[in-house]
Image (tube, rainbow, N blue to C red):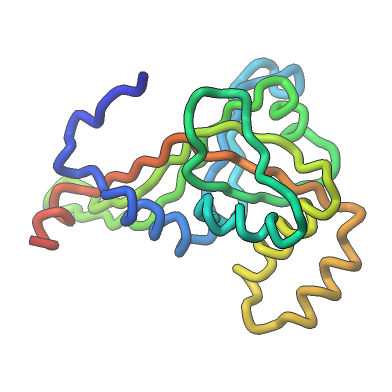
Length: 190
């Protein structure tokens, strides 16, 4: 179904790719176009939290909830959560087509004397939706806030309480996760 990576030596393992997604803090969400974008694809940089599928299942199970299952034949391998205003182009594009791609750049070092770039990046492909259930939305925003303010639990809770009514949470159910790095980085690892 998907094209195999042409330079397979440069492909990161699934665990390396998941680690890359967990440690970074920003990426670009790409959605199909909609009327608001004049039909152009819509890419927007966002803060995010990546959760392994098992972690999200455990989080929701504590509240008696099950993870959302997109209408597809592919297994979900992870979840990415984003926050958003409750209306706007991102949500309009998402409503037009829930398929999405999220790209994270882990390293991008230009090496002029070699006419190349030492890069490492990952892409997540999946299906996105706006989380409607308030308990599930709360768990998603808590996970996002914990990633960015891990040592401030009281401040996180106060901020969430203050902003909860104005914030939408978007969930990307990841069905394919792939990572790649420059051949020079592969060689350096031995």
